Image 1 (spheres, rainbow, N blue to C red):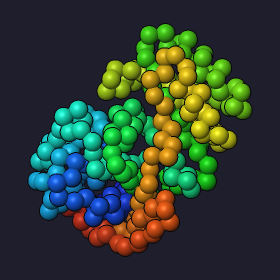
Image 2: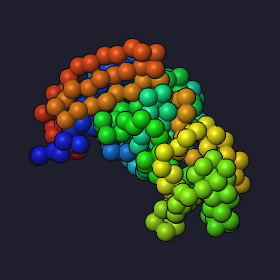
Image 3: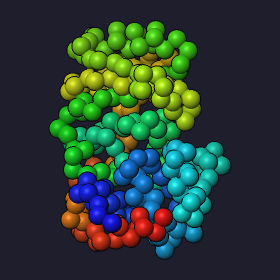
Image 4: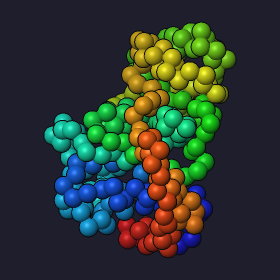
Length: 253
């Protein structure tokens, strides 16, 4: 099986977070293509049977169960030790845009329930400033057109009045909670915290994809298996995973 350089980099990032997983942990499992590598690796971890895993989406839950991990919902699990998730963008302050898979509501709740959040990504997700990736905003279906109008008005004072706003899939896409996702093409976001506050104040908005001050560790993977793990405190660790193992993980199911 031949894997793309992007897939190998995602695998390396996931492998770079694996030694943070310890027996007995209550572990949040993220959603998305990079997080799926993490789930496959965790299932092969020596401590796998001693973990309690809380997925951030139905898709992740189905994969985790299929691989034999012990899955529990967040209410029963309670406070988590660690969540490992992917991202769509990460800036130098470790602020994030997430929600490309539409799971950012569950992802943010799980991250807020964890003592530590680790993000795994390939180098393309590192940006100098958030906003190149469209910002997902989960909205309820009732009165959605009015909600989009209020979002547009909230963006104007922030210098983002020209942003394009569109319902994902023309309104056909639904989150695990049955809501819609509005993708906002902001371009560079001058003040992410001001934007987060403005969106949170709009009636009809359930949650936005700005994850600010939540992540404390970022693992960046490369196609050759190299990865760097960096902490918001300046700590840095570099090593290499075996890229040949990636194909074996997929072949195993």
